[in-house]
Length: 111
Image (cartoon, rainbow, N blue to C red; front, side, top):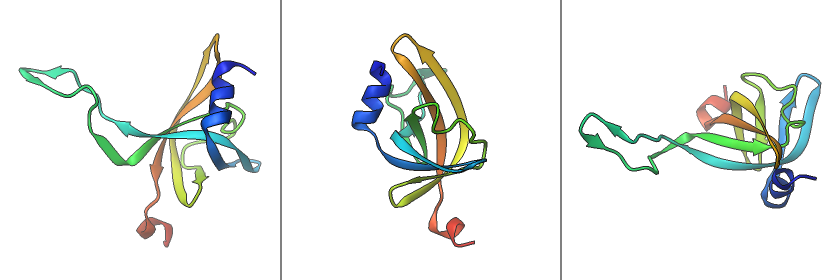
């Protein structure tokens, strides 16, 4: 097992992902998405940016989201998310998926 895959396995939480073949289970790391801007005109912005409370980045093994597309549901503990986009990242330390998720609010979930 490569370093990145091992780190996700050690630090990640249990998640379930809706795929074309049913539900898959695995581990992933969820991180709040932050806007980043260096400078715009004469106004400088913080490097850390500000958090968007409804958007998150998910890092997980490629097999977990292999057959997931836009709009698939991801269960992360008691929270539910929709998949917006995903990128497959490959490097010498291992392969992983970086995916953008939007949290499903109570109003959306009851409809």
